[in-house]
Length: 517
Image (cartoon, rainbow, N blue to C red; front, side, top):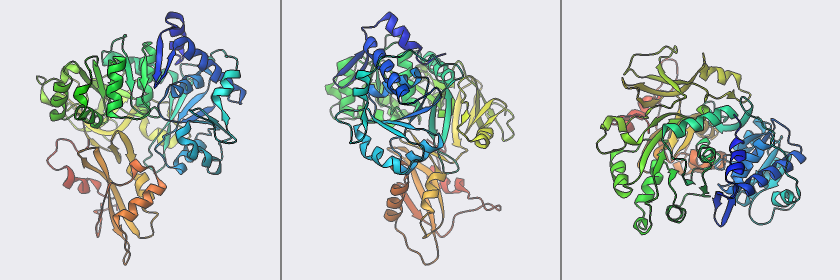
């Protein structure tokens, strides 16, 4: 299974058909594949060898798609940089994976300029964006114009395709290693589970450094479907793209869906072409679903659940469960396992528990990652006997529907972003005024969950919430920073001295069916 295979198929079957749409630029398959082969030639000429990691820092665009496929065409491994990270976090990910080459667009010139002073592994920066390259940096478009296309390296199967960083429970991000086979078969399986058409026109609003955003691009490419790349999410721009391109499918987190259908200009646009909206990160509550069904009567809604380590989807809740007539309890589920995934609920010894009993959600199948980059101990913690232990608590009913009820690992999902509390706690405890802190996720109307810090100050010390948040913004990405802070004289501890975060969460989540969003 080669991730570049659809390019050969598209070139053979529909070379003049549009495949990428980005603003005023439209690429057909012939042009797209030629640019991929030229970009691969440039990477190889710059010393990139099979298996080397190549990073990209940029907003969604046709060039981002070209970066992905050209890296694979050259035989190398993609390392999509989280554009919301701080400079220090970016440098850490480059050094951790020994990434020596970084592509960047015009939006991240300032960040890229400072990285050589922070990263030990980075040896080459290449500008791949609009406008002129910064001084001292080569411009990829010029290099590609002079390059001769090279042949596809044809790597596939168990060859490493991507190192995608996710938050770390110990405070450092972990590089998830995904193979060609992981990504290829997972996207095919997701398409099958969500019953998508082969004549689709997609809109990709999800950031492509996420496996979800990249996954949607792969799903569309596998079906040789055109896709609109949106640099950032904007309700009006999204509605204009739906109308202009007669788009049929997209992925939106529930907060984005709500923003679209409640926008004052929503009724001005023709959205009748939309057929499928995938969503994830949090369930759609009944009020929002009924509102969406009324606003978009021809749309099928499908929920997908998973994680980066699972390439990323293991369950899907089909459109048939997203109707006013469907049993309400099914709308609260994460769906059934997709065709390639085997899912079970286990106790803390890894043993299956009875139907309806809460335990840890575990999954097995060809979508399971190869492991964490250079972290054998953390890999062994989650990959046991062929099963990936997700860290999510849940149960399965007698029909095979999976329900997520709690998060066993200290992770918060806010606006579709994963935040590990240890990362935030590490930043907060750098402040000399702080004696102890616990970071938890609490319900939030807009973001699903928000990052909330409970802080104990040292005797005689003073600190404001504003000062704490400002400090965090200097150390970690903005979306990881606390949105609310409370100061307490103490944090509840177990006899072993472990913070009892569930007690801190109880006040906020009391009366809700789930302890997480």
